[in-house]
Image 1 (cartoon, rainbow, N blue to C red):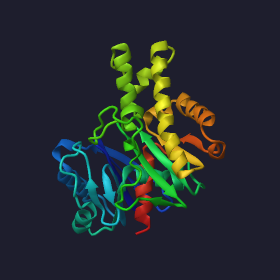
Image 2 (tube, rainbow, N blue to C red):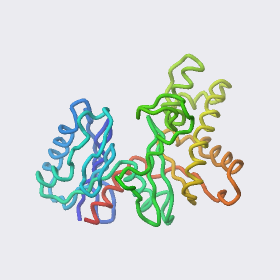
Image 3 (cartoon, helix red, strand yellow):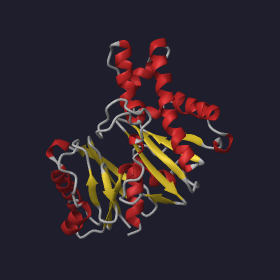
Image 4 (cartoon, one colour):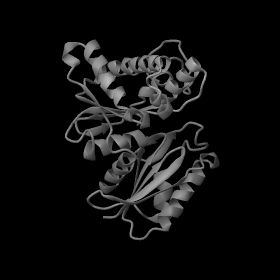
Length: 291
């Protein structure tokens, strides 16, 4: 079986071929050009598919809340205008005749890590990605839990500070307003009066002012994780996002959780996602292989 796997994000559309052993080859990417809108993005995906021969299945990981049964975008922010309501599966299957699986990006990444990566062999875990916002996924008893409306895992919008900072969701005090990579960048800029990206921030880790902001930010990560741990009682938490690759973060998160959790919850371990950019594509390919 030859699968063409896509990862549609706000910046890039990544894609690759996947064989029956889930080896990814010929990895490529093109700019999303999100400003052109959701309809145009899917038209470009269809163009890519039509230029490939011998494809048996299509797997698509995408930003936005996804009805995975219908392969439709339930909701997407204005970062991709007009994406809400896009019937991805219906459009692609009508245009190409190829069976297509569609899933949310963090859900796809969780499946990729569960089958091939950091959570391999673990039957229940939660997955979070720390970036511009905080995405999440719940994996219970060896399958993805999507909730009543396919939207479970919106961990970035649990409230950790009632009445606090404004969030892109329209609420106040959301987890991602304090614990996302974007929040760290903003807090550092406010503290030292200089704009830095995540890599630059950790390059100046020995700066006491920056170190203080980082430590406060890690406290914010722990606050949200404690709630999730007490709700799901997982053995494992898989954390992804480029900034999480900094070893200090997961080491420190685990230490602080050990100090703060009740005894019966202390077996949980926070680990870094290991599949990187491939997790989403592998998860989507795996779902496509089951069609």
